[in-house]
Structures are given as C-alpha cells and as structure tokens.
Image (cartoon, rainbow, N blue to C red; front, side, top):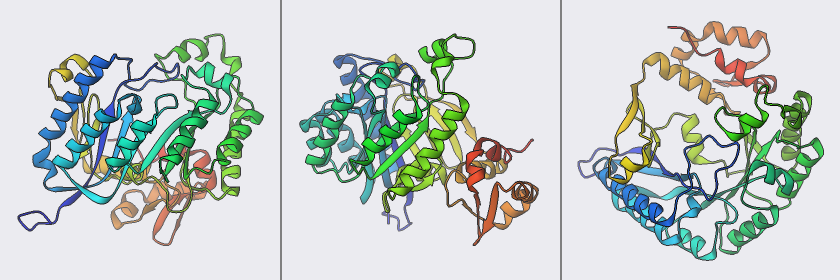
Length: 379
C-alpha cells in the first residue's frame, strides 16, 4: 500500500544498455560499440532518467526488472550496481522480483557476477546462439563455445540458479545435425530456461547484404525443409528433456518461465528506461528517442507516442497472448468481436476453445504468423 492508502499497481522495468564489444552481423537492435568514457557518461544519464521517474515509482510495485541491450555485461560491476541502486531508491521493488541481466560470453567476470548478486540479480540470460565455433564466427560473435562454457560455469559457481541460454537456428552453414548437437550440448548443462529463435535476415544489416534476396550467398542458408525440421527437432528434443514450451520460442523447466517476458505477452504495464527503450503505461505506447548525444546531455524525450484505441488493445490481447501455449482467457467482449475469426480458425484446426480459454493448436503455432494476423482488423 502507498501512503494515501490506495493499492499500488504493478509495473515492470526495462533498462537498456546500448553498447556491445562488436555488433553482430545479423543484429538490427539499437546497439553500438563505445569506449569506457562514453559508457560512464551513459550510466550517469541513465541514473538521471531513473531518478526522474521517482514520483511514478512511489505508486508502483516493481515485479520484474530486465537489463537488456546491447550487452549489459559490458559495464563493470560497480556501474551495474549504481543503476540497480538507483532503481531501488526510486521504485518499490518487490522482495521476490525477478531481476534479469543479459550477458555475453567473454564479458563476464567473478567481480561482475558478485556485484550482480549483491544487488539482487537472480536471473541471467546468456547469449550463446550456437555451440559450433564456425557458426559463431559467421554470426560475428565475439566468443567461442568454450568461452561460453567458462562463463556459464562461473555463473553457477557464483550461485546463480536461474539461467537462460539464447539459441538461434537456420544459420548460414548450419545443418540439422549441427543444430541437434547444439541442443544436446546445451541440455547437458541443464539451464533452467532456453530461448530458441530462428534467424531472421533483417534489412540494413551486413547479413542482409550477404544473404538477403538476390545477394548471392542465400545458398549458405538452410533450405525451407531443413529449417522446418530444425523447428520440429527443437520442440521434440527439449520436450523429451522436460522443458515446457510456454511461448512460441521459449522453453523452461517447471517454475522457470520468464516472468518479465510473460508480462509483455500479457500486456502488463512496463516502463522502458534508456536510449530507445519502449514503454506501455496507462494505455499509451511510446519509446525514448535514439539520439545518443542528446541522451548523454540529459534529454529523455519520447517519440512515437500513441494512445491505443480499444480495438488496438483487443488486437494486442490476441496476437500477443496467443503466443503463449496456454492462450488467452476468454471474455464476452472477445467472443463478440472475434466470433467469426474464432470459427474460421477452428474450422482450419488452427485454434481451439476450451476451459474458458482460447489457444493455438500445434498446427496453429506452426503457422502462427498467419493465424495471429487474422486478429488484425481493418479500421
């Protein structure tokens, strides 16, 4: 409860660290290399933005914090501690809040991990992508599989009991066999959570110039049948090892689904802090600007601010919520608005309604892009 006796509402926090040792060839996220001086200035600017939100923070209970990037673990331990201390000073952080830091192999040290633990970090997300060193080289990663193993084992030694490993399939030069080997290698480590995404060739990236339409090296990418088999292998192999698929691309041992990401899919309110970070608060979506020099000077301006209409809220409820394997809780409003869509997708065996919920079938998940697009209505 807050001082005026009103119940505090829940809020998730996202802190963006836009720096990397080296930008990967496939990446289109907001991230750039930067020297230590720029990183230091950024930490001070981000602390300033956090403290600016203190009035909002007094009336919100923070249930999860996600420090993403970029590569947050590029910061030294003291800098990460300063940021998390600012959050605790400005917000009411629940004692059982999930606090995640994204990390890349080659940037973790015992000192950093110790600082994380002291500040309440209880979950790490380590970007591996592949256990094959040649595949890692083609991706432009800065680490080898052996360096990942060192980072992973160090995190375990430092007491972290909730670790996610990021993996990526359909890579240049990747085969069904090498993907299966990556899955087996990671499963032998018994992480609590595995995120397994298929590579998307994004325009404007070095990969697009090499592997995009007409670029000349598309042949190095797995063909459609091979990519589809990798997708099925992921489901089958992880399920056999006790990992529940709770979202289209995310698998977890029982009790370890990522609470922060579930918040996005369930449209819980979140506040993004840092360069280019996105937010959803009080029915408004917006993001911070992307001008680093302005941000370092203390300009925390927003752009793309948009108050959602009721139709947009319902659309988001469906195309985000149906990413979860448990689906969406049905309401009279949803039944009325999407009656025709439900019936059409049920006839195609892509969707099922049962026990007061609606969810995609296995076939529906396989063609989720098509099924989810059905919930986007014309004005």
